[in-house]
Length: 249
Image (cartoon, rainbow, N blue to C red; front, side, top):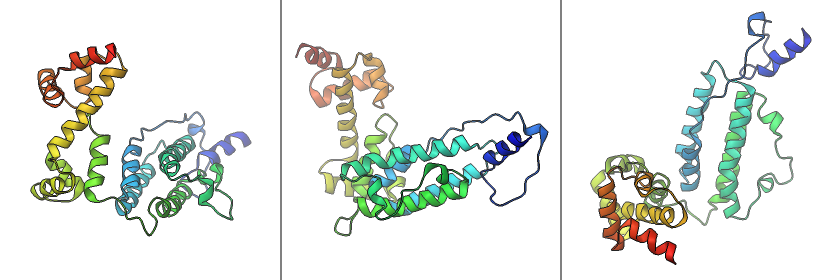
């Protein structure tokens, strides 16, 4: 009975300092892992300096977690490690360790951070407060909206990138965004996307054995003949010819 009560307490991650009643029906409850597809999005928001959007998205994530009936302690540990994996590469680019974010104090222990949902949310908010000044010191402004958009495009290069969706991400009118993008990058939005897709296709063609037809889908082209046409437009040769040349070299 004691072991079962202790396990109930371990699973009690939503309510702190509350009385809960032993329930024999919950004795055989199994931990369930929920999908957490948000971390690529959080990484982009960290990297582009969109702090307001980052905090808003974190609030939405915790509202979603709080509404899950099958939320388990293991899920909180999974979130904790995933968040660290978002932050580690960004800090590494600045030659900063996660430990240096806590000068003169102990780094929060995983067991305490993941004890409950409120504690995990507080740790996330505190982590954002500590990481953002490192990524963007006073003399370095966050990325421009066009640079933010470029990061977004590179991250989603295998998806269908519609101008209207990109404009919504940037928060601009599509026509204005097109003019602004050309002014800052010296090329159109569609040209930038094309170059990004061809660059990724080149890497896959030269460094993998993935079928050319499959590579087309991986870089956002679901019509193979259109992929071949656009690739040749950029490089002067077909994808097959490029792969043959790269293998020869």
